[in-house]
Image (cartoon, rainbow, N blue to C red; front, side):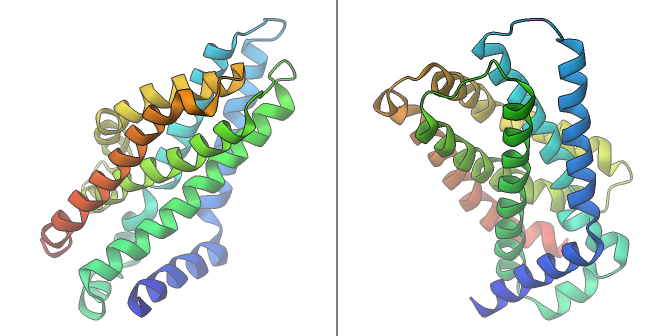
Length: 220
């Protein structure tokens, strides 16, 4: 646990020192919401469409921020040093926890901006909405942490990350859009239990698979 916490603290200190990822993601989310607002000015959007737009913002916001998890190590030249001083499991779980925190921050920022600018949007089941945001953050981070390690040494990092991530994240995107729209419409929490369990199971499987594969990715 000490090694994992040390990696997590390193990531947090590095991010708050440069604020590169935070500022980039905030600017991206704000710009995207503003463009959607201008494009739909005067239009009444139904909850399904707003839910889909919300997930588009979450997906591309994550692609902007989470890709730097391992890419930054390669760019700063600390990749080899991290291999020498840390065990693979500590690196993986430290980066994973940081990505979960960052993903939650991205998604809640998108939520706040959408609620501010889309006055017609009402969330009738806020508990369900909060749950899907947290589970979506966990699912996105669990799937993209290993992908970030895979593309760290590639030439086209920025292009590869969303290309590889989209088909892997597609199951929770489809389920997530439906649950999010349901929270806007006020469906009962019990009706969404099965879908929430799908996202939670997906996250658990991705973390388990990534843990077993990370040794090969990290060393090779």
